[in-house]
Image 1 (cartoon, rainbow, N blue to C red):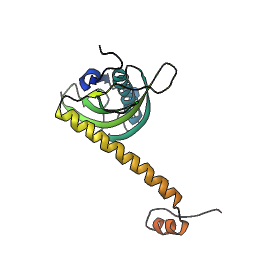
Image 2 (cartoon, one colour):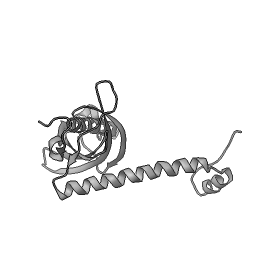
Image 3 (spheres, one colour):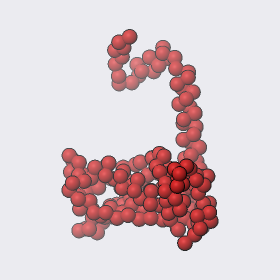
Image 4 (cartoon, one colour):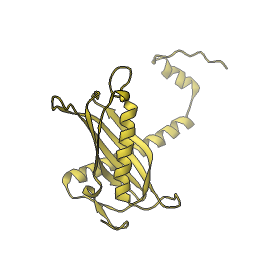
Length: 187
């Protein structure tokens, strides 16, 4: 056990949750509903982040979710989470989802996701999280990927704010002519 203020290795908070996919989780197409998987991803991200932080953590954003393959009823789904990055009060958790067909023994990578969490104290204020000890080249790569993902996200929001301020109706109408939409403005 590490004191709350002491740096912790990535391995300290690695978390895996495994759950059987039951018929009530299926969508109209007979596959496991994406919302079920998102809920499980949020759960494993919370467990992983809270263990590292030593505090309650809340989801700030789900930066990326890739649904690579369908998950079937009867599959055993394992969600593997690790802290990839820490800031002052935030943590970025990487999640890999794998589905195992227990009859055939085949296993497939079905989802990847990155969730940003923030640590909260007793009074629901943000609290500083312990530093992350990187012990392998893979952990260094994931940390740097997260730094890059954070920068891209910041740049994206800056660009969107600039685009809102620079809105020129005629220019937008020209761009929309190339899209699959029809303008029927009421006012």
